[in-house]
Amino acid sequence: MKKLIQLLSFIFLLSACNNKDLAPITIQTSNGEITYFVEVADTSDKMIKGLMHREHLNINSGMIFVFDQTHPQPIAMWMKNTLISLDMLFLDENKTIIAIYQNAEPLSLKTIRPTLKPSAYVIELNAGEVKKHGIKLGDKVLY
Image (cartoon, rainbow, N blue to C red; front, side, top):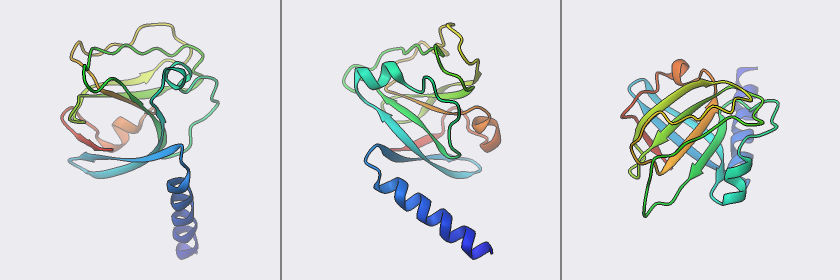
């Protein structure tokens, strides 16, 4: 049974890798590496929509927002029309985590700006992932 579960997990991950809309990211923590398959928001339309109107987010999935790499600036997020609680990781141009916002409140219009440092990326994950995996400031992301 264990081998069947491993095989099915492998097939799922393989199919996720073949989906052109998903990209693997790996977060390197002091507890080890965690890999997620994330949607890439690299256009204005994708960034505006984000994870709005989703009733759930699959395990080990999320979204990465890719901002202007030539002129990173402080980034503000919000939870408008977002039905699920999220953890947010703010990364610099070197893909180092420079700020973390945990358990963002669903449907909130509150501005989320945990740092005034320039951010080149923001990763949104299911709420609780930061605590579960011990993700911390300074951890690196491979993308």
